[in-house]
Length: 171
Image (cartoon, rainbow, N blue to C red; front, side, top):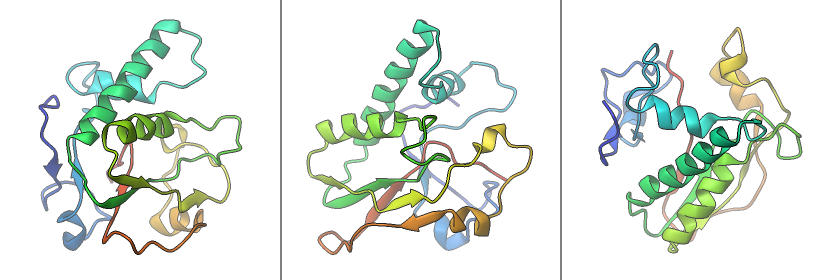
């Protein structure tokens, strides 16, 4: 089902084996990738968003920028007032030449729309690793956690931190 402007809450029926039922009450998603679905529905904008920043095709980069902007606007529709927002670290460290800044660009546009949000960057990955979609094996949650560190501050001004990820992988 293509994105229709509604954010959906995960349910017990969703196949997210690493989330507890308590986690599900506070996890939302806007789009779903349909494996084998080609470029129909949500697959096209997700594909465009995930297009590499070094793609030599100027049309792919144009559509990537459009998807970044589109997703920022959709995120802004949540009206997340008086909260912190941060992103899940990517598979690359920020100083890695292959680091992709699409989430940074999306958050920059989002913050220009929602000015009552404080963006923080307390999480970083310790070392670069291959992205999950290019790996032959999945990392377990303990291995993923071991590569993420809290590197900045204490946050007491707002009651919550909203964690944004571009893709949540099932299974």
